[in-house]
Amino acid sequence: MRQRLFTAFLFCSLLAFSQRKATTEDGQLILVYDDGTWKSGVELELSKDPMGMDRPPFKGQIATSNTKSKTFTLTQVSVTKNNITDDADWFANNNLSLPTYEVPNSFRGIAGKVPDKTPLAYNGNKLVEAIYADKYNFFVYGKDFASGFLLLITNKKNDSALHFLDFGNYVLSPEYVKADLDFIEQRINWVTIEDSIMYIAHGHSTYAASSKGMNAYISAINLKNYKTIWRTKPLVNNSMNFELYGDMIICGYGFTAEPDFLYTIDKRTGAVVQTLPLKSGPSYIIRKGEKVFVRTYNMDYVFKIN
Image 1 (tube, rainbow, N blue to C red):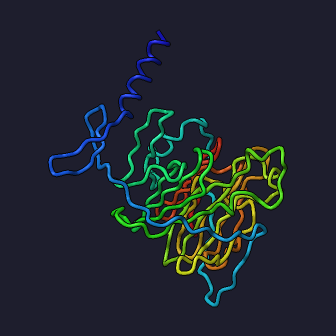
Image 2 (cartoon, rainbow, N blue to C red):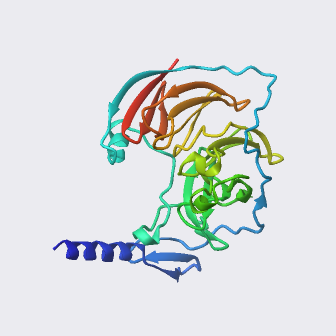
Image 3 (tube, rainbow, N blue to C red):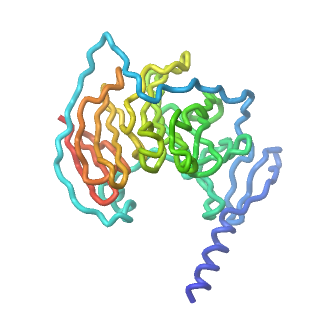
């Protein structure tokens, strides 16, 4: 019985993902799915190759600022154990969400829900993550879902490519354990833009010692000249996302037996302002009003912004 149910599930998944190209009466190319749905088959044209970003400072690079930042502190309100696999319940019960699109995954039979014209691959690299903001879409490409070093930024309508960047120089730390090479590629974890400055997180998901402690950063990059303004010290952010609020960034780091922390970062300089210990590594950090909800491996926290 279990085998028949699995076979039926797999068959339905493949049907939902299967697609064919067709042309409408007015000449538009569309993709038609076996479940009867369709979308535009025209992808955004990328006329230029991605621009290679310079090798980053792997020991961090704190900036100076003539303007003093308005900082805040976080105070813990509550902490409760979770069931580890109940992420969906945590999002639903707290009315939380992440600004992400579902990307296609043929292995899992997922057709995905990305905007029309989104390129699903580039030069042999597949779309592995898709994030949106008020004015932008962010598309990350890599060789598989454990990697991601190409970043395409489009306008919200998704009809214009604004930036196409190659973060290949961010992938490997200058020193690492050679036996762990297959596990230490630092991928793009999260990205957003504010006032022409891009804040982007890179990191891998294994022990920090494998990359000699040079892992899990947030960088601030000026999109007018693509120069790095600052880069945090290592081991600051490997959560799924980070939050910008006022002059600060809320982020976190942790991995199995390593120390686990929630951090606040000065958005002007990249310096750590506050360090709060956690009982396990953070997965999601989501602000809702004056509260910050933090989901870790086995604990759920709520912090108040003071």
